[in-house]
Length: 198
View 1 (spheres, rainbow, N blue to C red):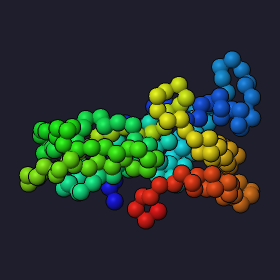
View 2 (cartoon, rainbow, N blue to C red):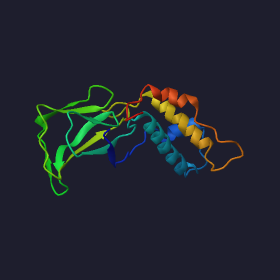
View 3 (cartoon, rainbow, N blue to C red):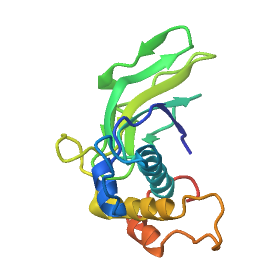
View 4 (cartoon, one colour):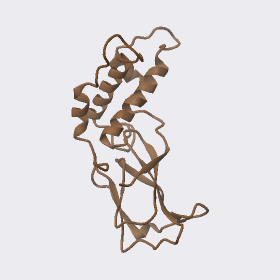
């Protein structure tokens, strides 16, 4: 299984504060905003991360890096949907980077699953100590951007998680902790991609 490291985290969350207020039924208290803004923003991120962990998708646009000790026949880039390569495919020894000519490989990103890199004929041979580095952008955008919009069921699941986290935000309560609503996994299951044994 290929592991991708986040090198630039999401700048914008798929759920805005205004959408969160509507969903949580939080009213304005004064002209300076609402006292729970910081809390709600952190819960939005937590809800996104929960849904990302369950689905294997990148639900907000992020930049990733994959490093490989050797080329494989095909390379699947995790955390779809794939947007673009940032610096192509490079061979690096941590001192210098040598980009592989774009004409030597193809990118199949037709499906909603992993983007697949494959050589046109064969991958170059690596020297001792060299690694393959691939940097790419993946994730959903919003309706105003050229990228795929986040599917409504995923957004609904994120809002359910957000509502649950907001309602159960105290570290200890008199009531037993309630598990996440059943609808969350039902809404997300269709979009789940294969990650290792998941």
